[in-house]
Image: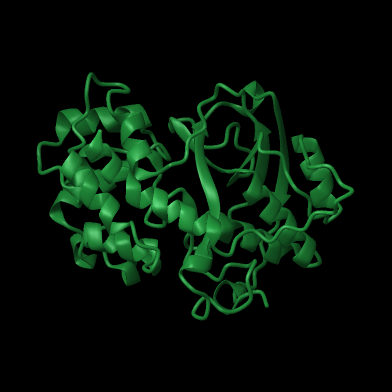
Amino acid sequence: MKSTRRLIAPVVLAVIALFLGPGAVAVTSPSQACISTPEQFVSAWESRSARCVSRQLLGTVHVRGAKRPYPKGFWRAWAVGNSGLENFLTLNARYGSDPGQVGLGVLSLVGFPGLEQWDTPVDISVYQLPASAGVRIPTFATWFQLLDGRWTRSTDFPRGSQRDLIRAYSTLESDAVGAFESVTGCSREQLLAGSEFSRAIGCSDTFLETMQALGPSPYGRGTTRECISRFESRYDGERDAASLRAVLLQCQDAGFLFTGVGWTYNTYANPLYCGSAAEQSIRQRYTEPEFVAPNVPFRRMPAVAHVPLELSEERGSLQSGYC
């Protein structure tokens, strides 16, 4: 029990520090009740109103036309909670006269990389899940607890390697991509420039060999379940921190911007703060509390509504900032 507490403690402290630091800036009139349904969220979006949002609502940004929050092969979907939805409404209230910039801002807030080239249409889906759905905060410790023994009798995620991984991400004074580089060897600069994982950009052997053993991503022909099973049955190399990081990346889309402390992150300017990306602090670019939830079809949800986003062709604000 003590070793488990030592693993989790740095993450808990990081989350507390973020919550106590500069946070969401949504504005709510005292006379307005909080939004409690997806339909009310859409109405507030259309009227460019900044409102508080019920804790019962979640939101996921996904490719337009999707039947569920994440592609079918994923076991869990990534989502923001009520404070993230409030920040979306605030962004829309401030900059709604330029819907394309609002759309880019939303994608930046939820941690999309490669936005200089992104042109695929996307929507925000706002939804409710049953109270028993098992929505979780996606720290490293939580992920390994969820995945260990889920589809195999036991999956070997060595405790020492988990500790090394958590330590690499336990400071708020370096960004998540830098932490990813320190664990995997993959060059931060090259990743942000769009390079693929390879030895040419410094990725370690254990990281690359694990990625190869895991097989296709759930974005393609794979599934989270098959990915974890392959790790147990096909990978016989060292299960160090880089190997475990590869598992979360390939099997559940915990990309190089994943923080491990339950907040989204991006290297672009946070659109809710003034200043350029270079001028903003690292902590200001930890943008939204995030969650993982069952990846169920929209048709099986108690309530859901969709907001189409526009994407501006002008992308300078990603680095120069919104004000």
